[in-house]
Length: 271
Image (tube, rainbow, N blue to C red; front, side):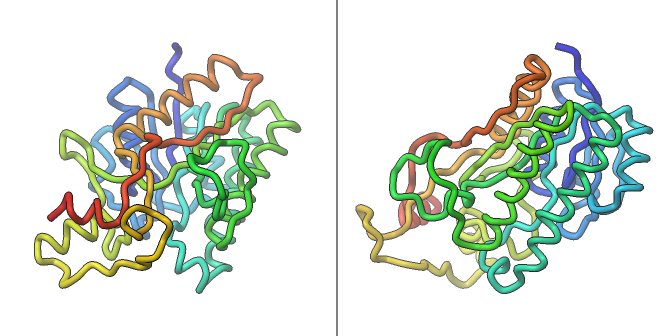
């Protein structure tokens, strides 16, 4: 498989930095664009070009694509906190939808043929079936999910109109860190349950709030499918290989293990 130059947006953040490592470890030429609002310069490995800027800056993107000879984009940049999206919907439609439109426009202008999108299971809303499959109805219930779904719709339209194929990866809850301890979940004030629970166990938080104890689950707390971030990064590399192997095909896939764990099960494991 020919390893083409890849631009990773949000590559200094949690999941993006793991994808950068997975690509670099496998020998892919890789560069990063990140505005460092939640990411960290140290998370980008030595030898990987880091452009500090916004994915809404089409002029900057055009320069990066030309300098790097970019042939694929992995798009992680965006806002991800569900309650914040309800409080600040316009922020999410700007960061997750409008800026994605600019990124797509720049990619089309530069002739970039492959696009991998970090989507979310929040596009399904509150599905009535479990496990959730890719053909379930997409009825998001918050601006975060809607902003991601709008980008999925844009990708489908762009792929029909231009020589670009894409893969949208919808995942649920991401956990863990690089097995070699090169990067991890370092965002201040992160809301991920496992990180919150570990911080509480280490004395960095005085408690863990459990929201809801009357769900239709064995212990009454919400059940979520968790995926290790290293496995998720590997899935993005596999998705890129699939797009290159079949340029006429686009893909949408869920990423998870198909096994859920409740909030209390997670807390018991950490305790």
